[in-house]
Image 1 (tube, helix red, strand yellow):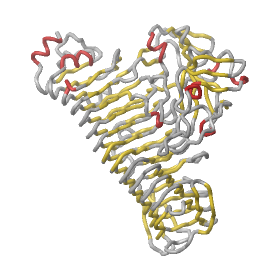
Image 2 (cartoon, one colour):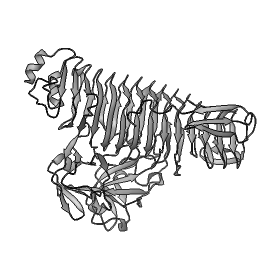
Image 3 (cartoon, one colour):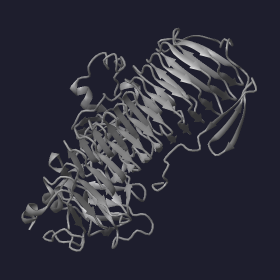
Image 4 (cartoon, one colour):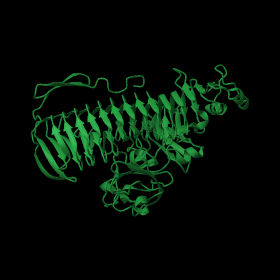
Length: 610
């Protein structure tokens, strides 16, 4: 039937699909097809075609591939229908097993590879040892890190250093079964989740089945966690997949019944995969349940796929797309110029939220929250390429940086960010490096707790960031509102930085900064930490540090001297600050000049996804 349809379909053809349809049907509204796979076969080579997705759940046996044979294709959920695509299998046949539920998993793909479980629409945590916090391992790697610009490690790690770890024998036991267990080794700004090849219980030696991104013990970090052991089931909501026995165990939450429990394990890493696609639109669709491969995710957990993954495609449009409860990234577009991602949502993800790499791309009015659940180096919203616009988004509750920009000429504006950097270090609310001519304007970042080590900040310009402007932004409750490292010829101007305790701005190994017309207010001390030629101009700022305002001179990263900051051209009295209404602050400086920072319109302009 499908082959006959191909002959009669024409430009702009519409095919309807419904879970209650029939793949032998015509695909009309009254006789829809059942699967998107059948619709894709029928529409191959038909320009400007459309698949209208009717209400219901669609279980995908394979990735939906969209390439150059589908120019101008639109896949759109009917308005209000809320259709959902799943990249896995439903777990059935649950039985009571003491306080746990268990079920057989016959699917070999799920047994061998599943790294997430969704129950009742939510990502459930894997069993872990220890129950909270981390174990401390004993591996040491004291080779200096020379910065990314400097080539990374002074000496390249050996294969043995990347694939072995010395644990305390008291911390591991026969429960660490190599066939099932996985280990997360924490570094500084990223982590490595790897499989276990063998364990020596007497010595505490663990050999990994795949290499870490950095050696255990690098950066003087000696933390690790063991996942997916039955002994790690310590509270309701957790699960364990016994790969040898091909059986899953789940500790149900109160009120969950094995007779009607809705649970899914992933079999696909990517649900929709686009390669060399042109002008494709995805609209009004939901995606749930996707897996990741067992490998170190690298910086920003960037190695992991998205539930929607596109590469070398152009003029893509994603509108009102929701990705939830996946082990990897929500949406990932790589080398996709002129892409538009609008009013989309990524939440409850193991890795990142939304990543869009492509010249002239636009990411607007999106919601990203609760990302990095399994891979905490993940980025909430990542834009790259040249001349991208990232505006009016809301990014909250991220384990590492909320928004990352990489490339040239971007505008990052009018975004709302809260509770970033919950786990990792050396990042910020808005973070970018190896970038030039980026403008960061009129954003609001609040409630980032500095957990020490390399720190956490609101606005962070890292290695080789140059000719960038950070202006008109607000940070609330953040010790390091402006962090700068190995960057040059940038401008920090017209910002409002408020904190209830000490505050500092860092400019290690930076040159030729302009710092002007900012208001910094703290009831504690306020420090500007600069290399000798870090700033060419510090003028017209209001520094309100009740316990003093100091300039700390740095040699590389070492403090050479601390002196009161010279007062020429700056004010050093605390301003009068009133909050006029939510996200609006009025500031009257010592010169009696009133200034208003109005952040009432930051974040998504449409609240339909909130």
